[in-house]
Amino acid sequence: MKILVGLGTCGIAAGAERTYEALAKSQAAGTVPFELDKTGCIGMCYREPLVEIRSDDGSRIQYGNVSADKVEKLLSEHILQGKTIDEWLVWADDGRGSERAYFSHQTRIVLRNCGKINPESLEDYLAADGYKALRQVLDQNDPDALIASIVDSGLRGRGGAGFLTGMKWRFTRLAEGDRKFIICNADEGDPGAFMDRSVLESDPHSVLEGMVIAAFAIGANDGYIYVRAEYPKAIERLNIAVAQAEAAGFLGDDVCGKGFSFHVKLKEGAGAFVCGEETALMASIEGKRGMPRMRPPFPATKGLWDCPTSINNVETFANVPWIVLNGAQAFAAIGTANSKGTKVFAMAGKIKRGGLVEVPMGISIRDIVFDVCGGIKKDKKFKTVQMGGPSGGFIPAELQDTVIDYESINKTGAIMGSGGLVVMDDTTCMVDVTRFFLEFTQRESCGKCTFCRVGTKRMLEVLTRICDGNGREGDIELLEQLAVLTKNTSLCGLGTTAPNPVLTAIKYFRSEFEAHITNRRCPAHQCKPLLTYTILDSCVGCLLCAKVCPTKAITGELKKVHVLDQSKCTHCGECHKVCRVDAIAVY
Image (cartoon, rainbow, N blue to C red):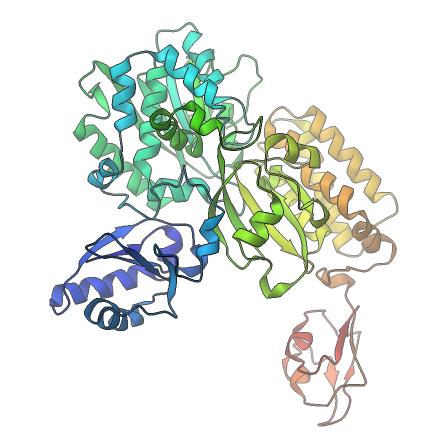
């Protein structure tokens, strides 16, 4: 009997380390015989800490929200008595479990090992056919055929732009140069995105194997993984995986004894969002300030230290071993005509099941939000999804049947991006959330381009003014003008896509902007300067609102209708939160 505890960052944040320690303590006591192991994130972040029990016959049962204080019951009832604890059960391979729907619509390629293997165990990865694809590629010794297979698979880069991976490899292979590089872009900076982090924490060897295969394809002997320093657990497990792969001969001077050499170094990024752009990323690796440069020349011909360089992200590399083992056609059979395979999404926001999902291209937004993620929290009204991070855009509820592929998403004005998907309900103010994303991109702009540096600043100023109740006639048109100028004149992807939240918010939610400017109202009741709180005649005089009011703006006697002095009200909303009889209206 083996017990596994999910020790990804999401699990650790929920207390999984304490659960693991409690299990280790019981194991050391020897009263209950079991084997204890760790695993990564299986995706159900909303039910962490997760504990899986694998019986000797191979059957698996997973429990959710297993805090340290539940360990004694888990061991007593499940391990000693053989009884399933139904109220904790989230998934079992015999079909039981409250969260089966979370997986039933998923197709797992990138996440195939996540939550199943110990990410710090090379033996576990090898048992899951790890490095089998690399051996096959080296035995065949045909880089051109390998690249042709990746082209035929239709794999597009999962970092945002969606360029064909095989074509990028081919351009780099054909480029002149004695030294070439492979770079894994793990600089995941989008608010609400955690796909790359989870894969690196849960299955680092799959990314390394994809990198070695790519290096063989293009003729590179050196590679870098550019990972942000805010991911300590991912960095720790990557370092373990690199050391293990070197010791086993999957990295180094003579990979698998085939005479091919490939070395990998980790470069920790300092958290600059602009370094997710490939030319800024390469500048950072070279020890320079992370600022984009003009293209062409493209990295495939003149990249790191002016050498031909191929850059792909974590998810792209994790797909490669699966494609090699299962064939290009197996991958191409999944998805749509121009968007093959699957896509990993970090699901965040106002949904019941937040976490990591991998779905086939062609699934609709509606299916992801409602079938996979269980719908909106508290069954509120679905309003919009924000896709693509600060560089993406809003897709409203009326377009929820839009399918997930590059072309369909682009038509809405949003972008696929790396895979962050933030769900919002009707309590979200679209002006305020647009201001939030502009604040992020304005702060993260490197400042090289005038319109990115100044244009994002001016848009942010206008949005802030509107949220503060000082909007002016013509502000919407001014925002559109600034957005178009910034989009058309910026050098890199940060500037050219920073206006997307503004343009899509105005396109689909123009009436909210007009309400803020013309009527001085926030329909979602989020912009405090635009709110008015009023005590209705249905007030029962319970005194709760008066007690929580920080400015003593509410007065009244017990069991009598209270009065709110608008001159003292700071619009904090505390009175509205505590009122038990809905006697405080918000306008």
